[in-house]
Length: 461
Image (cartoon, rainbow, N blue to C red; front, side, top):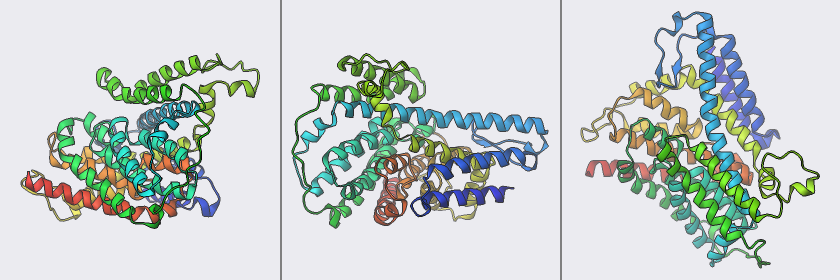
């Protein structure tokens, strides 16, 4: 049965990558794969001998001896657990995307656009790379990608040129998210799991992450796509006098989310919903419409568009949200059977040990690098979850920092390897194979360069 599940996952994954060839939206195979995997698991529950407890990050003991009803109860609890964790990400994403669209409704991004005076493609590349690196550490790589691509769409009209910038933004955002405890889902997992502390994470990963961003951007700056100048359209003036106010309010509201989480210890999506409520309140005040978010008594479609909140909600990329749901829940199915855990354990036992006495661990550097590459192919969240159950090293051990770097930046090598990539793929309709050919090799070079930098720093400290 496990073999059948893996085959279905591979077929579904291929259907996602061949989206443009098959003329089928990627969300369809993602959702179908998710449903079929969990359905087969329910039908064949009595034949499984292992089960991964995601809450404790370890395999359940004596699972094969459990009765049918008990196994089904565990499956339902596991499904609910993964749906809850996935929904946290999706609700957070919905809130962030809505705030961004509300800012756009008031033409707030024109404020940042006005700050960028240069027309040089190379200079614009460096500006956006550093913006992505810094913003992702503050407001997480997912939200930073949404914000910067929205700004990019206001500056560069030509999509063929713009997707090159989007690709480098993905690399820079993932690199920036790796050294901050709130910059990426995986680093947040390690932080909440008491595997890393904020100051040690920054100390060990800031420079490697910076190298991971700078090297690809430096190489890309010599490519034909970033030579010359962009064509700038003449501005007709701001659409709204509240544009700058809504921009600063919206970004401040997003930055407030990690502060809210630190103070309340609640999941980030709760703070994002509060931020959305605040931004939406001011949006409604500044708008002539008095339509509430939850209102269903709208007289006409034309009247609905007077509401900035309703207008923002109609522009959200729901297909990307559903795709994210499908792919995360499909990977969760493989994780639940312990397949990812066993795979990671096999790598650990099969590879030569290259750890150092200074690192205080017997984990192979090659295994952690492979984990980073694997995070691009599968997903970094379940791989990091599996690593939490595999290793028992103490807090702030170099192993955890290297895992945070590899899982956070490795996903840049494929467009669907990270949340930032998935969002960019939806916002700009970037082709999977175009990204693989044009951007993937840059991300790989940056990933390896940062990994080498980390290992060199480890020996020097």
